[in-house]
Amino acid sequence: MFVASLISPSGMLDESLVDSLRNAWGGGVYKWLSVDEAAEFELDRIPDNRWKVWQDLQAMKVDLIFQLSHNRRKKMLLADMDSTMIEQECIDELADEAGIGEHTKAITARAMNGELDFEEALTERVSRLKGEPASIIERVLSERITFMPGGAVVLATMKANGGYAALVSGGFTAFTEKVADSLGFDEHQANTLIIKEGFLTGKVGYPILGRQAKVDAMEKIASRIKIKASDIIAVGDGANDLGMLARAGTGVALHAKPSVAAKCDVRINFGDLTALLFLQGYDRQEFVELD
Image (cartoon, rainbow, N blue to C red):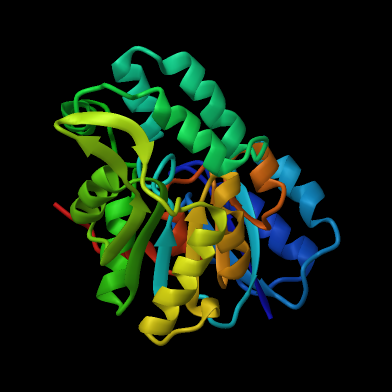
């Protein structure tokens, strides 16, 4: 059996739409996970017109996702950081603070789209930060970084249900440490900015954590905590996330670059991070809300 999920920003999912799709595809009784925001129903097979309907629903700001009904609730969350758990790209914010933002942002966009080699693009962008005081990191963290809505609730809810959470980023440990601590991740991995005598050297520590390193990290963590890749829900937005998204039991392209989303079946373009809970069948009443 399969499950069809319809997820939208709060208040935008119409009951008549859910019911008409259920009828058209011969699905079972639909269930609200959050009224006017997320609903689901079971069906025997994925309909042939799924992508045509998906395209139509995008114009209504509704995401449509099909999954196997078995093993939807995952034991681990594996998350990218930049433009996923936070709303910014940390390298771009550092460059902006240093007054060299435009050139760096252009490289970041191309790298995340898969147009440039990730390692080369990262080393080039970091090299332009040479000579900046290390205090620039703390300024960016305190003044420029904001969390993606819903992230803390996702972690709290999954962990309350026995889940594990790992933050694996192509960004920098100076940022993942803060984000992981604030949101409740069990561990974090990222690249290291080399600092000498209080200034950035323009170099990054090796080996660089890129696309394959994220897959390797996922495999090692899964082995250590004794779960399978099928027990993992992974989320990211860039080309360097495609490996882990393909390997995980559920790989979610969240507000992803078009070239990245095109390679993923599970796409969330409009909902916030709580969509990760709806995809696993959590009812909003099961969410662990934080003060």
